[in-house]
Length: 174
Image (cartoon, rainbow, N blue to C red; front, side, top):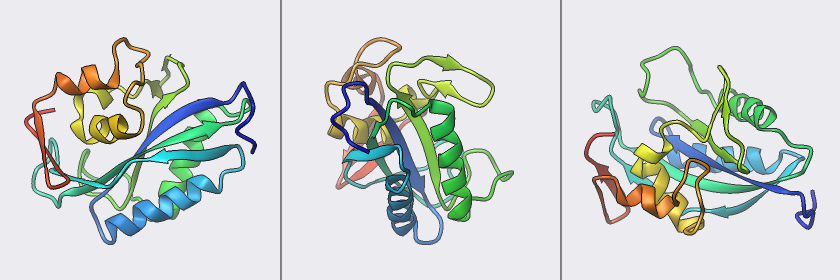
């Protein structure tokens, strides 16, 4: 895909894992996303570790955020389906504890300026503005990004109670 198209849209995904080879699973997920024919990967955040939210008795997560440059023909539901397929291919098991451990988690955060409230897909991602492990890496690759729900990534991040120490994100409450 050529990124020179004036109609190309930017999308952002978060990648997280805390089982098996978590960092390796994220690298493999990024490679699988890069192989999708209708997009190119733009900036990718540095890797962070983050303490688990909600269900605390599990390993820390490895987290990253990636910018995607999507062809005009790309759709948010189509991208979501491909992300779910990639998760399945990397051993993601569904039906376990919500917010529990996982080999890979790919979340579609933003797709252009689309706002969607569908049973399968809500855009922007409904919990992204409450999660430092999403906003901190997103701010690293898109610091001035305006959110469709209003304000910027930095504004949302500044409202959270969190700290980053040596690449580890700690957050009080979600």
